[in-house]
Image 1: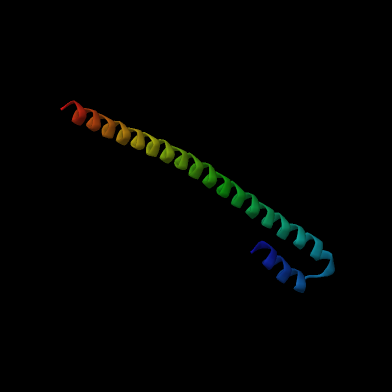
Image 2: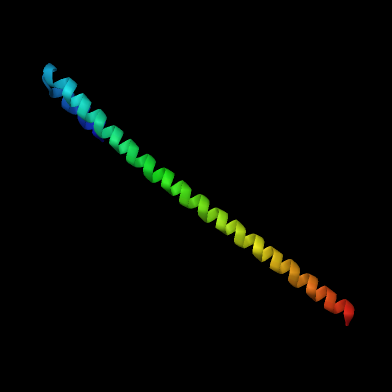
Length: 79
C-alpha cells in the first residue's frame, strides 16, 4: 500500500514535493518486499526441514514393517 498512497499523494502534491514523496513510497515498498522475502524464505526453510524429517520417519516405518514381515515369514517357515 506504500506505492498506492504515494501515487495518491503525488497527484495532489506540488511539483517540488513529488520526488520526496516518491522516494518515501519506494522506500516503504522495498521494506515491505524485504520483510516478505524474509518471511517467505524462512517458511521454505522450515517446510524443507519438516519434509525431510517426515521422509526419514516414513523410511524408518517402512523398514520396521519390512523387518516385521520378514520375521513373521521366517517364524512360519520354521514352525
